[in-house]
Length: 226
Ligand code: 5RP
Image (cartoon, rainbow, N blue to C red):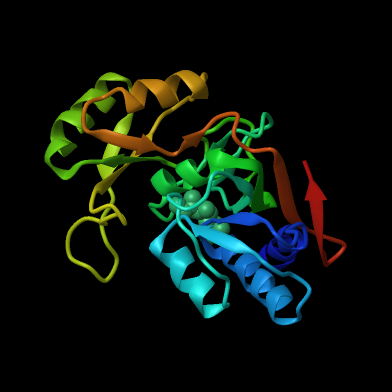
């Protein structure tokens, strides 16, 4: 499913465009197919803007030329994954702790395409996935206290095969928050970002233009557009 949806997104990239390169295992397939189209000569004059160290490494591996936000004045298309997608195309992102850079790049794109498998579709945000909040390390305790006052249950994300907390590409921590109900994602996004010490949270409200959903129908992987 992830492979098919990544390919479907890569097929929408046109020559001569600037492309936001998202983070995660689904987007990794899109990057691979963009690289294959470049190698075949089908796609020319592309510039990629990576949303993470992982995206940068993959782009280099697949020979996708890179640029930075200092050197461009627009992004034509961004392709990125998500951890949850609601019926209004609002998202929770940050499973890979990259949501701060992802939000910067995805919001700048004229068209933002989200690539997910069908397990990511939810009726209400927060029902299956914790909400990631990137926080400056010295502020972790007051931020966690403030989040509890908002009704959330915060946990500091810990590293795997690394002692201590996960460190983001910006050198910060990630607090994962369980909210029983996210009734108003737009309001919660602003409220969280208003807590001193919070850099960015994983709610992406009104940013996605197209959702490409990979699903298995009659044993075959298919891609549906929302
Ligand atoms: C990283 C993200 C990813 O896009 C999100 O976690 C989805 O990843 P995957 O495609 O591996 O399920 O937001 O911060």
